[in-house]
Structure formats: C-alpha cells, structure tokens
Image (cartoon, rainbow, N blue to C red; front, side, top):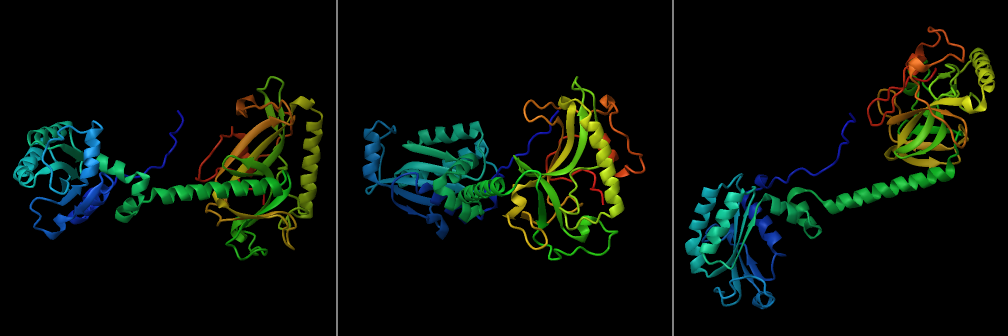
Length: 420
C-alpha cells in the first residue's frame, strides 16, 4: 500500500488564547465590512458597557434599500433615530451549550428592549452545536429582533481567511496567506529560472562540478585520506543527466548491462562504474596509475561482452541522484582555473554523506533512442553474461545486486558510496 502523501495546512486558529478585550477588538474589526455603518463603538473596553461589547449604528439609507429589494423580514421593527442599532456580543469561551446560550439571551432581553436594538451579532471563540444554534435563533425571534447572526469559531475562521481580512489575520495571529502566496510564487519563479538556466548551460554526460558554497576549503582537499571524501572537501565532479521533476539529475553509477529478449532475464557488469569521471575530467580524482590500468582492463572486458550482444539487448544499469531545486543557488557556466566546466553552487551539504542530494532513481534500460525496453532487476531473474567480481573486491557494491527501489524524499539515500 503506497504511503500517503503529506500535505501542508494551517492549524486551527486559537481564538481562546486571545485576551478577552483583544477578542472583542478582533470581532469588532471583522464587523466593519459586515454592514455599512455610520459608526461602531467599542463600548466593552471601558468596563461599564450596559451589556454592549460593541454597539453599531447601521446607515439607514442602505438598510431601507435592502428592504426595498425584498431582503430581510421585519422591516417594521423599531429603529434608532439616526439608524438601526446593532448589539455585538462577544464570548471568549471554550464551549456554550444550549442552556448557557438560553441564559445569555435571556440576560440581554431588557437591554435589547430599552435600546430599541434591531439586530444582534453573537460571536464566540467556540463551535456551536445545532441545538445551541436553534436556541439562539428561537430566542432572537421571540424578542422581535430584525436580524440575528451567530459567529462561532468556524464562521470567524472563514472571515479571517478571506483576502480582505489578511491584515487582521496577521495582526492577531501572525499568519499571512498573502505572504505565503507571494512566497510560493517566488519559489516557483526561482525553480523555473534555475530550470531554464540548467537547460541552457548544462549538457548531458558532461562532467559538472557540484560545490557546497559554504565550504571555504575549495579547491584544496584535506590531507587525511582516511576520512570520507565529503569530509575532506564538500565538492565533487559528476556527469550531468538532465532535468527531473524535483531537481537536477546526475549519474552516480552506470554499468554495462543486458536485458534478455523476454524482458525478464538481465545481468550487468559489476565493474567498472562508468559514471566515475576520469582524472582528466576530475582534478580531485586520486586514482593511481595501477588503479587506472585495472579500470581500463575491466572496461575493455565488459565492453567486449556488451558489444557482442544483440543491439536490442544492450542496456545500461544506472543510478541517478537528484539535487532538489531549493538546494541550487546558481550555475556558473565558465568554471574557474581549477575546473573548466560548469559549476553548480549549492546550499550546505546535508549530513550522512549524502551531499546535496535528496533522492535517487535507478533504471535498467536498453540503449535504443526510440523504443527502449526496460526491465525490473529482480535477482532471481539474473542470468550471467558478464564476469562476476569476487566478493572481497566488490564489497562496496554488494547492495547493487539487490533489486533496487525507487526512492524519493529528504531522508538518507541508501546508495553505496563511490569507489575511493
């Protein structure tokens, strides 16, 4: 069963964490766009509010126009001399059950009558049950209110996430959807710019220097050859393999291979790794002359077997590693006095010797440009065509014999280390 794909979301807004008066301020500011008001008064901040957390006066001309359009019922209900009076009541509570809602509404009965209140907005930092909502609207109807609106946690979040209220969302909770959208847009533009630059400047199978921009030891490796290559200097030369959906691909391993006519049988030459640049291509390749002659002999033997195969059965067994777009800082097409080819500057190499790579791909495929065949490198289907390498000489490559798995993600890349 495939693993579920993680998604990014915004956690629920914690209205209950606001100080009570700040919650009143939040609701009052959200109410500004609710109607056309002649004024909104933050009466609750003074303490002695006569039951009004906020009082709002609706512009009469707009109210009459709404009724002419056949809108709200109860147009004959009392209105204040200078406009309709609204009561905005705020409760920063974790829950309001039906009985408590009934008590709150009964407590407002005398105030609503004495102030000739036309409508009410009851806002709370919690979710309301259906029963509590029914109690609220029934009580409002009994009291003769022209309009009644209940703003629970869900309604408040809906209003906050509207683009027009993005400033309020940021002021109270430090969240800005507009900023996130701008950030996403900038990320996409940066990715596309890098992709266009790579397509223009980089050529497949051409050695390219991948350099950690934070490593000031470049171009001199540490002298201790017992340390891992990445620990001695965070840069390496690799053969460019093209653009992938999640970044730039580079050849990590490349072996002569064979795929049988049935598409099931297969084999590959365990040495040499044709993805390793030669000392001529890689100034930091410390291969000795003896090792070079051995590699040349291995290549000649593997190529001899490979060339003798039918052309439609000649294949490559490849492992490509991916540098994610976000890790690519820039691309220098001209190089420098130590490396004359393209240089890719990256963010700091991640630990565990993965360098800047986040994932890898493995493929067993024939060399045909059109109509290439692929096969699954299942060990039980492996039929010997190439000479086996003795286990002690191939101990670094034992993991290659196992059926490879396609891997994506930012965790450790379980690809064997390069030959030193």
